[in-house]
Length: 110
Length: 122
Image (tube, rainbow over all chains, first blue to last red; front, side, top):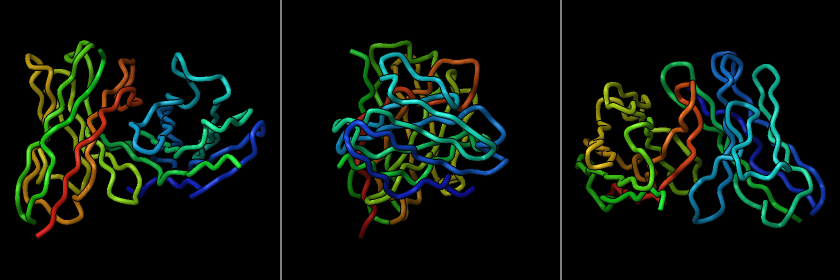
């Protein structure tokens, strides 16, 4: 199975909102409520920001939200802050006892 | 402290073998499915393998199927990845990760180790 499709980069100014898309297929993203989003700062371990499509783990800022429509999931970060600058990855259950990650999106806070 | 600590990475020649370990602490290891995920230099995260909480079932990415073997010792709170017939394209940082305890399988990975580097080169 191919990786989920994410934009290579997005950018925004402090205080603005940005959205990162994650496109899969009807066999993965579109079939299961198992999309997750991870934040990865350089040299750090990934941190889950969203799980089961739209749920936010305890301790994650409510500036992070997510949605899904058909085969595309989206992560929105509102009120951008400098500390949000990181790489973001989506993942989904692949439908065949496997997990598929997106290629990652580099978020730059201008 | 709740953590995962990988070890066992290093430089190995093509065709060689390596065994990675991941020591878990601070949580009930035997309650969680566990995964290995890797990241090659300059590339994104790629899922490698998964094992059920009691070790009764395993799954692998097609790229490593038949060459890698995941296992766990719940008495020692340790996860393993035996890697055989290594190729240059297996060069990556390997992370062990804990799957959240939920009603679903193949759910999010809520705890990650810092990773161990595996370099396959002659």
